[in-house]
Image (cartoon, rainbow over all chains, first blue to last red; front, top):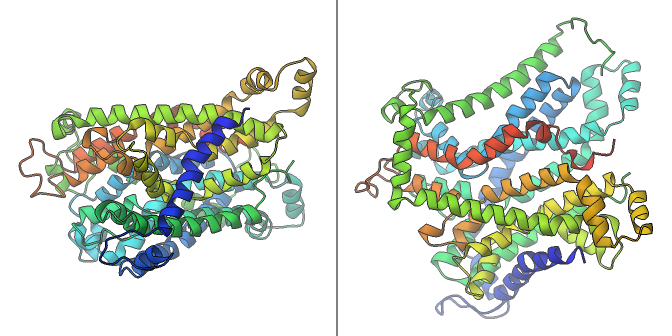
Length: 283
Length: 299
């Protein structure tokens, strides 16, 4: 059947590892010294780890800085472009899309270049705060803001394309009726377009909320270039990596993964039940 | 679109000016960061002491950069590049071979568990793939396949977003009558897919291939965990090795190194790493920014 090769991959790459992690997380493991008792020993051990709560607090802080700014920037720019979709809008859209090619490590190098006061073309900003080394610029208190900047730079172009697709689905009749009724461009955007693309904004928020929980590359390399000024277990995924690789604690690593999986699955279920992604209701 | 004022000189209201300033300003910031970054590869280490992104530019610096990067750890950079190409090409091919037929079947055929498969596919899109990296590590380690490139390629081959986009495309853009007609002509379901649906979906498949390749090429966590030996690494992990092995960020550790890695060399490595993607971006500019066209081919 046409579907079976895909189903095989879905099982091997999606379902099996998830179930395997769940099973491993419930089995006794860890060092003999601190092995607990009972089915949830691994969960108790990792959640009582002194690094566990801070790692989620870090993600929370980052989300609080990043998500509101991201939504305002993406939706605002998309509305401005949609107001008059001409050559200017298309050029701006393309420029904002370019950083998507830098996703991951290249984007990180770009921000290293921008943030390090010894190389930055905008070092005057850092200097005005009295910061002259990367270690003071990238100190732990600044990390959520730094990550937010990296993620906004990376994702704005991609998400504008998506929100723009939502704006394009608004019927021309609705817009025309509002104009005939004397709506200004501002009123049109705020009172007609914005409410109509609310599902898309919700989609944007939820997908990026889920994305926030998996952060690994950026904080992990920040930790390396600051020689531990930013701890190497900054995010939950980094902590899971430590459990798997440094502590060789399979059960603990599996437990952290299952917790992250549960959080993101929950968000996924909200996305599917609250938006019309299954396509059947659409024309 | 507004009041049909084509050809007329628009009046400069405060709103028009604010819109213009915002769009041009934001694009300007993005462009400045990108250009200053790329130009840094053309500068010397000494020129970095100036904030001027144009200070010390010379094409000759590129060959110096390249020599440093190639010389790192006995020439691993080209090995990383080969590894990345292999794994990403394999993953993209596999994802198209499995995902496009599946998207077609989900859109046009009736079979048990169809809706369930669709829901799971959507869930797998929302759940970031890095959440499954540690579980995949445990699975791959359990069957003793750590350090195998093919294992990473197979994992890359599962790209639920591609399947979903194929599903949307076939559901919206492929008329049901066409399939009915082919059935009356006696074609098998597989032949209908191969000879009727597939040729009409070329553009959508191009977009899906690009998105898969982009996701695979920039993936860091999975190859980091599944390919532990230095000569097995992919380019993303390799660039991270260059950063942490550089004189700039580890002066003590890199003291004995035969190559000199400072910001210009790191930037050059990052630009070389991302070059295939930038090339595709520029080549397929209209396709991509025309944007989310996968589902909207109908009109």
